[in-house]
Length: 461
Picture 1: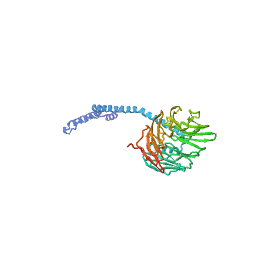
Picture 2 (picture 1 turned 30 degrees about the horizontal axis):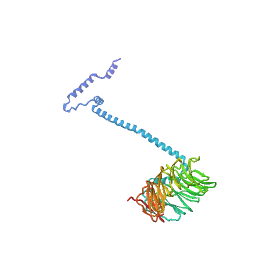
Picture 3 (picture 1 turned 90 degrees about the vertical axis):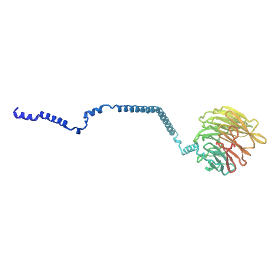
Picture 4 (picture 1 turned 135 degrees about the vertical axis):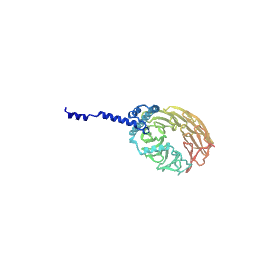
């Protein structure tokens, strides 16, 4: 290497002496600065970072306390969710079950959905939730006719004449009416429906309190009709080759059951609350003696009757149910109580007294029997166990009616209301112009006169 290259390499190397002198001068200038201008020592970046890395004991305690509190709250929430989980599962299962059942019934009965069905459901809901409870009329006015028939209906009144059927609401106003031409009008009433028909004819009409549900001409002559509280009904008619025929319809007006009697004439019928049991009383005429019969039928089966009871030498008057638990049959000389299986449970004979009238409440049967020659008589009471009490009344009997837990008795001088315990409810009221009494399930009585019906509520004063 020549001299020029060595010189160039020396110039590129740093001068260590100069670097050392600059460092000494920098330190000397720092020491020579006056103390008043000196600023407080600032920690270096590495010192600050070390401090940040160190844990703060006070904050660590607060954080640990808060974390414990937060953990307790989380545990409580977890426990609540754990406890609520079975209830949610049960509610979900119930909801799914109801939904599946609703869909199943919808597809099963979709062909039977109609405006009449929905109107019937609406009528049931209105009556169940008491939309009629504020309707309190004291007097009903109407046009009376010679062959008019009356019935109490939803705290109102039903009037059937030969030309027209009219339903009056509880406030006394006319809610619905339909024209009909009946020669011998007759009525059957349930809690929700009214069935009017021409006894001895073929015409009939089924209504509720605001519309006609079913009407028409039956295939043969109609003898009588019965209806249960839900609106299922049975038509007893004639037919060529048979003494009587009974046709049962359910509460949706669908034909359900037919029974044809070859030799006995059906006098009356009764349907159980579910329309699953049909009880018929009939009579067979042979010579000078009448022979009654009681027949129990299962409307869901076309097999032989459940039970048959022969009543030789007696004339059946009527049949009915007590609370859907017992069946009663009234004849011209006795009252019989049966189980739903057709077993005879009790029998009460009238002895030497004459049966004048009878009616049935929710759980009792009331029989009006003749008394002394100067008028008056006895009102006897029976339930599922048989006879349990009686009371006396004065005057000549004009009308007898029962509903709920009460029975109303009208004589030629006054009207009296009795409870199912045979005790009178309040004092009798004079009713010189009344010709009939209709009991209501609320304990009030409708006194029917020529063109008015007055509400009588027994007082306890």
